[in-house]
Length: 225
Image (cartoon, one colour):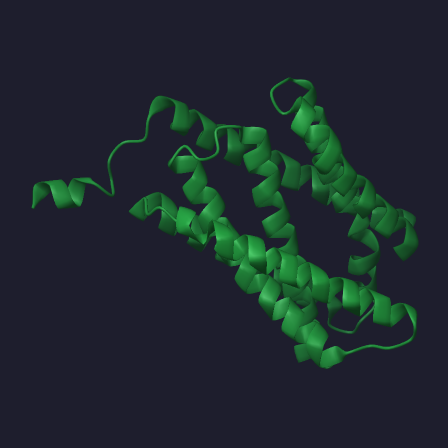
């Protein structure tokens, strides 16, 4: 009986604890940096087109540059460049919500909801030490499916069509998928599936940002704005 209770709470190895500690430290720093760049973007009033260019540039960094620099000190600067660009790209979206009568409340609620979901899911994995590696295939398929739907909605909007119900369903799907990703990514760290804290940070960061933007959309719809 004693072994049963000791298994979930068994001590993490020194290497795993180091990756976990570095990941959360860098994650907090990059989130703060993103907040700073978002504030600058909002103050300057960059356009949605520029925000899209920043987002694509950020994705190019983690797809093509970070994999080559993840094991060097240069990788840290790539991570900050990536998160800074993502933060700045959120400026036009946040300004759009702030123009609504209750936009400030919507943003605060989205931030609070994102923090609660991330903290709750992370705490669950860290406390129970459950292995969610079995979810790898599911989240991969889910990401591909959501990408296809997102591209369809973007293409439709270019031609003047907007599917509000499908867009709302997509946001709900993103929240569910990002929640699964947080469980999976945190599990990968504590079970040595992910040993690079730069890659772990960017994965968790993307999950948090997608959670936040999807909650913004849902709350905006719920407020009838």
